[in-house]
Amino acid sequence: MADRSERTRGAPGEPERRARAILDVVRSIPRGRVTTYGAVAARAGLPRQARLVGKVLSGLPAGSRVPWQRVVAAGGRIAFPAGSDARARQVARLLAEGVDASRGRVDLERHGWSAPVAGDLDRWLWARDE
DNA sequence: AATATGACATGCT
DNA sequence: AAGCATGCCATAT
Image (cartoon, rainbow, N blue to C red; front, top):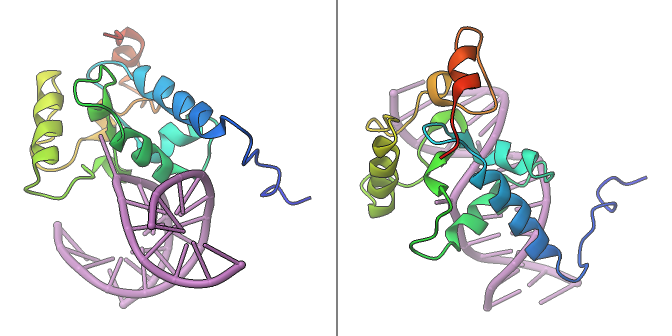
């Protein structure tokens, strides 16, 4: 059967449910760590919907407590265009929690979440949320 | 219903 | 390393 048609779409309240699932995941990213749009989507039970993650985050009200800065594009790349205000904000917020994104990308080997690398396991286990 | 648009991902040049 | 092309998928027009 078409796994595509199996997706619950059009159901009343679905968009919101998805947004909530996505935000839940983002909120669960520990301080000082980052993950990718695709990974957030997958973890929210919405594989291949990386773009939706961006959409949802773009709708966050200013001053939201959701740690959107911890979500980056594939490879640790900062999704915002170089020189943009949004980019500067994200970099600053990441720096504030000890993540260097000054070169436009974050080292996922070092700060990646949900991808504990051998050797970094200690740091992974000791990571504190908030 | 068809087309355009994204805070994306991947592969190839 | 840097672009460009193509795939993906929900939303907005």
